[in-house]
Image (tube, rainbow, N blue to C red; front, side):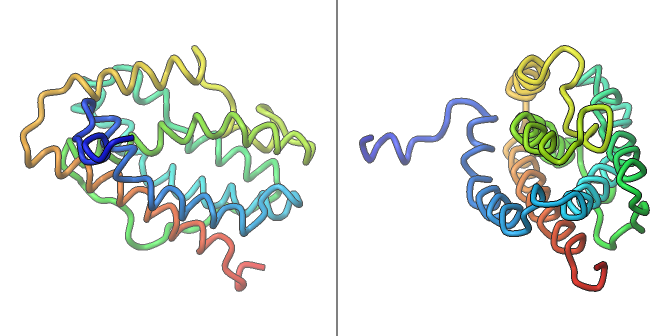
Length: 200
C-alpha cells in the first residue's frame, strides 16, 4: 500500500465509518474476549445484560418516524425484545437503565448509532456458534444473536447502501461519525457495567 492509499479519503461513507471506528471497535473486541462470555452460561448472561442495555437504549431510534422513512424495515430490526427474552431464558433479571444513554440525537448522529448496532449482526454470526457450545440457540438464550429475516448479509448490504446514498452536509457527516464512535464507547461502558463485581 502506498502512502497515497493510506491518506486517501474512503470513497464510501460506510468505509469511512469502518475506518474511524477501528480503534474503539478493536478495544471493545478485546474487552469482550477478556470477560470470556462463552466460558459459562453465567458469563454469557452478563454479556446478554450488556446487549439488552444497549439495544433498549436504541428502541426510540429504531421506531423513529424520520429514520423509518429512510430505512423502511427499521422497527423490525430492533433486538431489544429478543435480548429481553434471552435474559428470561437465562434466569437473569432485566437490568435497570444505566445513566448516559443517547438522548434525542440528530438524524445523522442516530444513523451512526444504528450503523454500529446493525453492523454487530455480522459478528453475531460467529458468536451464535460459540453460544451453541453453551447449550443455547436462536430460540433459547441467544435469540438476539439469531439470523435476521432475509439473512445477515442482505440486511447489512441494504442498510449500508441506503446510508451511503444519503445526501449529507459536512456538519451531518461529522454528526454521523460522532454517533458511530459514541456507540462503540457506550457499549464498552455497558459491558463493564454488566461484568462489574458488585453484580456477581
